[in-house]
Image (cartoon, rainbow, N blue to C red; front, side):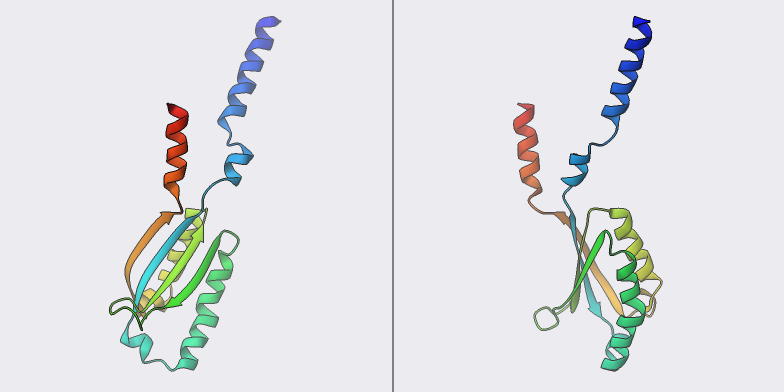
Length: 140
């Protein structure tokens, strides 16, 4: 009986340690993703009304679909940069939902016409060096 209890206790300990702790999940740092874009002549040839309609009917539903885990903010930069006219700042802790966002955008004229040329995508996490500094302190 002692052997059976010891095996059961060991198995339960292994299962408990293998599952992510709630506090670990809550402390997960979000990813910040910059999507650098340049408007193409196809986008610029649309009227302002057509552009607004496209954003409202095509893009907003995509942003809403991923909004539980992904935040999207749109910025203009054409006044300050020669090859990047616009950029998105995407914030998420779920990279799969970020990938879904990009796949859904690829099914629109953003990529297909294309209305925008994607110049670069930059992914980072804020002050991640601090986490590594703490980790290295613990390992010493």
